[in-house]
Length: 361
Image (cartoon, rainbow, N blue to C red):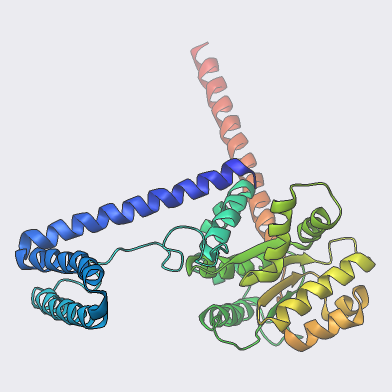
């Protein structure tokens, strides 16, 4: 992420704060116009706060009693204000400033100087926009799932149909999202052939958790190892590459898509174990999607990696035929039908034209 983008994000935070303050002033004016007593109370509280500092400076020996006396008066005024707000049915916190992120108060940084999760997510969202992932999430989420796309024909070895299977998988994924904040050590491994909905379900979960404000990193295994190589070996922007690398360990959810498509070697084995093991130890959740079976995973990766996956991940198998291939076949059939229909009309029109010509001649 370049400096211009970072600067734009920080500028957007300034605009958010300005808007929050402006909206609060409008809400205050609205309440003051209908309940003038509320404005009087707010003015009195403000005056007490200003006079308190002066009184303490003039009477340092009586500081404690002055503060207690002022606080009691302020509390009385606040109680009166709450009574009036409740009486006139003003919504709770209507007169509080309302930030998009209450953790950093729309500043992007916490009091300790660390980046807020919302700031990290903004950076990731910008990366998503550049890769068109945000557009993908708009069309691939729980609300767009269509079970009728899956066959209802029972697969003997699975003792269920792909349609029954996907409904069960949707239930597993929705429960994963619902219980995400629980300390339950739940991680998911999606496996099965291509075109069965694994990536779609990853997108569904990503969308739901992003909407809840969680920090989600979604990367193919190939891209993930590219990020690691950039940080460790290449002369890229050190600050940005370090952030990208750290996010793999620190994000709330890491989704690794297409595991097994990368070039496996001792380096990738070591780094994959480091990421998975560190996240497991820190209670961070992970989803892996792969076209490999658990047995093939065991053959392709070091035993310690397979052991961690087998022990700490829930295996979710996708069954059926390649949906993309099936849709392509339907599309091809439609095209062939349209081709013959179109040219049959052309032939008919040509025949009618000839008939009329002959008749006139």
